[in-house]
Length: 388
Image 1 (tube, one colour):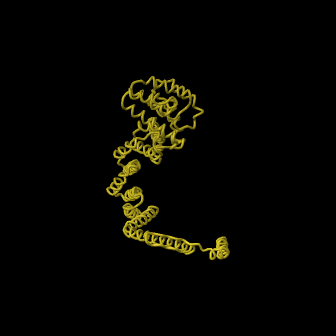
Image 2 (cartoon, rainbow, N blue to C red; image 1 turned 120 degrees about the vertical axis):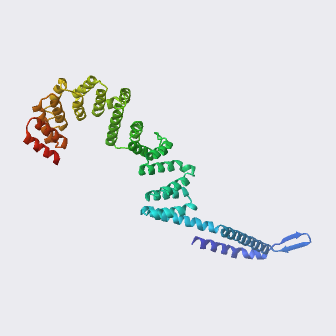
Image 3 (cartoon, one colour; image 1 turned 180 degrees about the horizontal axis):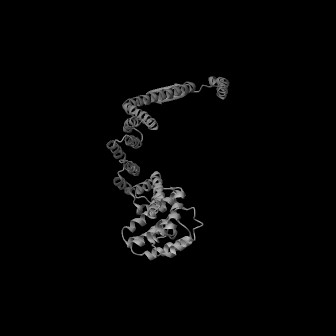
C-alpha cells in the first residue's frame, strides 16, 4: 500500500513539473574533437538512464557467464559433496538402528568428500567393532588419527575397543598415552577406572581414587566399596610379598582407612604370617573393644589359639548383643573348638546353621557331632550340607 502511494506521489509531481520542463528545456552541449553534440536536458537524462541500464545488463551477462563457467567446472565436486552428505545421513540412521554393516558402508562412502571426515571414520570404526572386524576398525582409526585434533579421541576409542576385546596390555598402552590426571576428561577417567580393575592394578587404582572422588564418577556407596576392595587387595598383595611391603602399604592408608575392620583384619593376618602374632592380637583386641566387626570375627580363629583367653573373654561380652550374628557364632565355635570346649562349640555351630545355613557351617557341625559320637545327628547335618 505504501509503495502504491509513493508511485502516485511521483506521478503527480511529474504532472505538475512537466509544463515547466517542456517550456524550459535547456540544452546540453558536448564537444569531443571534431564531434559536437547539442541536445535537450530531458533527452540527455533519458540517454544517461539508458546508458546506465545498458551497463547493468552487460555486467549481469558477464557475471552470469562466469558463474556458469565456474559451476560447470566444479559441478562434479558439488555432486560428490552432496552425495557424501547423503551417505553420512544414511550412515547415522543405520547406526541408530544398529545396522552395523550398512552403517560402516555408508560412513566410509561419506568420509571421502564429507565435511568432517574424522567423524565418519570414527563412526565406521564403531560399526566395524560391533561386527568384530578388527583390521577394518584399526584402519579407520589410523585414518582418523591423521587429524591432529582427533588424536586423543582416537586413542580413547582404541583403548576402549581393546578393553572390550580383553586385550588388556594393548589397551593399557593406549591409555598410558592419554596420561589420566585430574584434568583429564570424564571418559578417560572412566576408562582408566575400568581398565585398572580389569588388570587388578591396585596401586594405579589407589592413585586414581582421589580423582574419582573429586570428580564424582561413582556414587558414594560404590566409591566406598571400591576403596575398601582396593585397600584390602593391596594389603593382601603386600602380605604375600614381604614384611617391608606390608608395613609400607599399611602406612600408605589414611588414618580412617586403618580403622576400617577389613583393612585392620587383613593387616593383622599379615603380621601373624611374619611371626608378629602378639602385635596382631593386640590390634584385634583394641578393635573389639571399640566395637564388633564381622571382618575381625573371620580372622580371629586364624590368629588366636587356645591359650588366648583374653580374646575369648572379650568375645563373651557380645554374647547377648550378637546372639543373632552368624559371623560371631562361627568365630566363637572355632575358638571354642581350639580350646576343646566341644559343648560350647557345638552350640555355636548350631546357632550359626540356624542363622545362615550354608554348606561350610553344616559340615563343621557334622564333623563335630561325629567326633562326639552323635552319629545320627551327624548324618542329618551331612544331608543338610549336601542340600545347602
